[in-house]
Length: 482
Image (cartoon, rainbow, N blue to C red):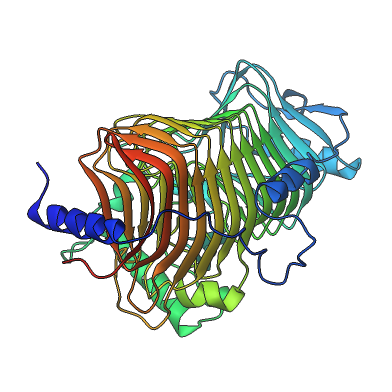
């Protein structure tokens, strides 16, 4: 049953809508800041990004890890053998490090430039459940803040031309006894171990502690599964990742990234986002399947002061022809977005699960700050969704408790069709910074509990939109909730 607050909000919205004139199509979106008017923008820019993002060029000379002592029965540890194969390939100028059919046990795998890690059909790589196997610590980002922590399971830092390919499986072996309990493990003082370490890290970021000094003894911050740090020309293709300790594929400060045909399967793990491009540029995510315990795709650019210190946005992200099942959001921006996000394109995706909380989500607050603009979302089918179809919210976590007012503008939604959910449109900005210039065109939102909840929204254009069989051709400005 619709709440009284939601009913009041809907009544206010409809009253404002009826007072407006007939819909007039908005002017074409302005090109991003600093971009010449003659340069492509909108979907023309998406096509350009797709054309320009190319897979790396890597020598295809093979280096079979079993030739270096790897054990295909999984009874013996193969960490050193995999590292030796990578080193041998690198010494020859690069190559294809082949994991043949079989079961292999390993600790951290560190990739080098001009290396393709090929996980063959029938191969399963099982990663150690012992945190000691991910030491020494490496430079990484954890929820948007830099530190030295456990190595991600597959890690590359400062490399060029690198790939993970093949039809095999990378199994993180995270479960209710390994890695995941850190999210809830008591610290003996009434708190949780990971929260204690997380809070300390975030305070280091706020205080500007030098990154080299950000090290936690006996860290309880779960590592990412695959992370590319400050790297370029990256391909992840056809592999399956499962049972992740935390975020699954995490390009950071990286450029020219392709994720293609990957299966990301970790619906039971906390914070097990599928793909999280962070402060990265020119990224294409396509033909992949997501089933996650958190966001399927989450675009980020650093958290709070640390994100502002680095000051590198995520931009030029194209997401197409993926399927998304469980998750907190299908395509999400934030909450770590203090370095800004520009030019996000999502089309021809299918989002289909009653356990998918939102289809498109932007989450921020005045502690995060940052600007999000030029977000394009079209031709996406949403047969099922659990919560809001479109959710943009400035009240995430801390709410309006900081001095860094966020900006979200120029969001274009076209030919999107959904069934179910709690809200069709849930847009809540600030009075001093309304969510602005959102266009929804040629779309239907069926069987939602509440059509819209709007707070501090300016220039919401509804053009040929049906919500629960009611037709809208209107421009809406919304103030505070009643």
